Length: 126
View 1 (spheres, rainbow, N blue to C red):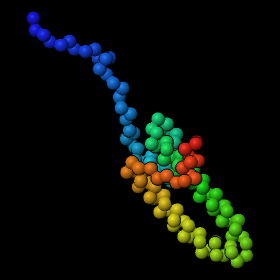
View 2: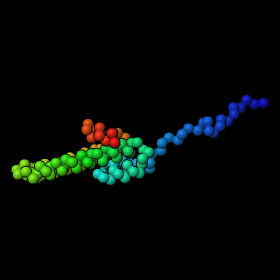
View 3: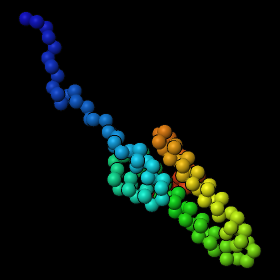
View 4: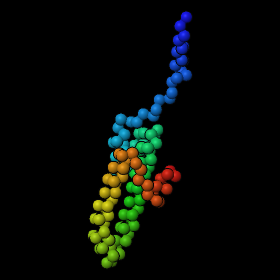
């Protein structure tokens, strides 16, 4: 009689499958930082913690920019100061926002997270 080990039951050796990453994960990470389009990855991938993290942070970042622009709009109606802020500062702010979102997208695609003091704290509570 040969000493052959018994084949273990399939149930004993099977491990839970690793969490498979979505095939469109890169697109979802990009959408996470494109304004309210972050709702798409937030709703499409509820089980992917990384996509959820970036989508939540992208939404909070968008809401923060909107609040800043509302504040700037209120200040811009003031005589004198309004011209400086409205025509001088706002275009540069838009350029800064563009590059900031671009930087966040690149970090997300590299598997890194961009944390911001107040924004990240608020998004993590959500």
